[in-house]
Image (cartoon, rainbow over all chains, first blue to last red; front, top):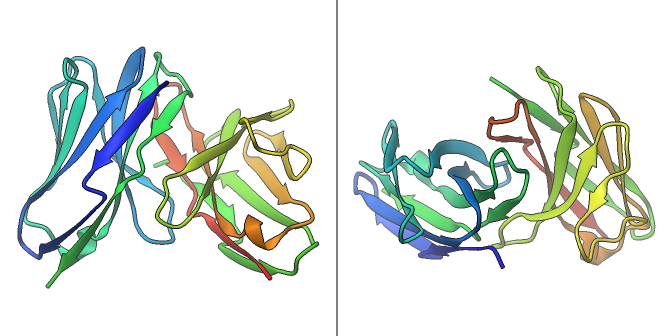
Length: 113
Length: 115
């Protein structure tokens, strides 16, 4: 059964600090992994996409890593801002261009002043 | 960029009534749209895949007669919650892809409260 596990479930950090969110998956065949940011009461917005051959990808202060061997991904947020407070969802796609997606439960990040 | 618009953003209805939620792709055509439900502190749960011009494909456990999906055009899919009950209260989100390799573009969701 395809599964995506995220940790921690929730996280509180001080503004300006860095943090790392984890995503472990058992999805086969693996196609790609995306990190989404979901603000409260809003739909998710794509941050990054990682394919099998990519190890690191950055989008501003967000850096995603992927280890396809261990089936782990991380999302690192640098110099956090209050606006980073949101849920971060890891979504893994099975098969090329597949609509078969497995969603993680998300990590709720709270950035406090 | 690709935009998905969802309407209404919030709706309160009485138990037993029906509610229609619209999902529109504003600047691209979407032959396939997806409907999700999200309970508090839970991730998105796929309810059904909406295909333009054909019947929707429902996930196991989702009642197709209760959650009616119509995808009559390449830019519009609707989800109708029929005979709503308080336990149907949830956050409903739609999504669509603009191309084969594009990410999912999500609507901003609809908060349904059934009293």
